[in-house]
Structure formats: C-alpha cells, structure tokens
Length: 243
Image (cartoon, rainbow, N blue to C red; front, side, top):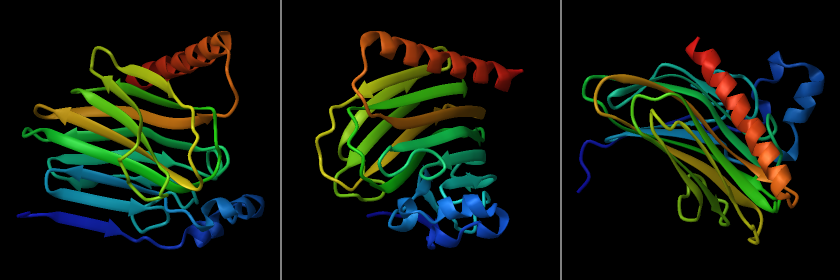
C-alpha cells in the first residue's frame, strides 16, 4: 500500500510556441525545428513521498526558451531547489547529435536531511554515436552524490532500465566522467540523467551533470586531451562558484 504520495505534474504543453514572443526571429525559426516537435523534455524532483515533474514550456519553467528549463524555489520533501537549468535540443545538441545537461543544480535541505532524486529526460533522439560521455561535477557538496545515465530504445520518458554509466561523487572527490558505447540500438530513443543526492542533515549542495554523444572514433591522445580540457573547465567553474 502506498500512503501520503504527493505527485505534481506541471503543464505538459506543446513546446512549439514557448517563448517565441521574446526571442529574435532567427532564433524563433530554430525553435520550430523538428527536434522538438515530437519530443518530451522534462525534469522530475523526488524526495520521500513528494514528486514534482516540470515540462519544457510549462508554467514553472521560467526560461521562455524551447529546449531550456529553468526553475527556482521549488519545495520537495525536506529540500528546496533554489535554482537549476536543464537543457536539451535545440539549445544544446540536436536529434542527431544527442546532448542533455543539468547545470548548476542547487538544493538546500532542512535539519532532517534526506535523499533528493533528480531526473532529466528527453525523447526523440536519432543519432547513433560511437560513444556517450557522462559527466558529473560537484561544485559544492554537503553529502554523497551519484550520477547515472540511461538510454531507452522505447523512446519513453524517465525510463531507467538500460544504464549507460554510473558515477559516484563525494565532497572530497567531486568530479568524474565515463565513456560508454558502442551504441547499436534502434531510433528514436530517449536519454535520461538521474542524480541522487544524500544529506545527513541541513546543508547546501550545488552540482552539474550531463551526457553527450561522441560521434566519431577517438584516439587515446584525443580522448586524453578532450577529457583533460573538460576537467580543466569544470575546475575553473568550481573555483568561480566558491569565490
């Protein structure tokens, strides 16, 4: 038996008309691409029995741009999500060049602490890359954080059945990334990022996570350079956040 379940889904509306009044005409044209016409892009926040799901272009998405979800001051369980950005096509990547990103996610817990699970999902990807790169960076962690990525050949939302990579971050080891592949499934498919944050009590955590396609075979040298450059940028961002 399930008791005291609080579930809230906020405005799954067509994203074709989102934000057109406030973006330049050239950008508005790109927002009308097929990349978003048949896709479902959303973020889900869960803590205990409380769940909130926010879709691109809904009332709680304050970005006004297709492919970008921005939310702040969302309460879920013992946590308050004070700020986060989630991005997908056409803001980053495309249907043929998959990319999904959770940027500067910031959550504060009360003295009770607990577990906060965040899922970012999008459907309608068609690219068949050689690898997927999953990354996680803890800009400031008050407890352990896991980052996992999933691909669903059924093209469903928030499906966690076929893992690509799993990362474990802690306050003392706060950056990680992993390559996964080769992809040989069908299209279209969906991608989902799952992050699980644990706070023992009151605390503030800020972190980012993403998954992106690596479309061509990469040499060991090329991989080292790419991953090293990514790690360097994340360290600079972390220092800027703490300054």
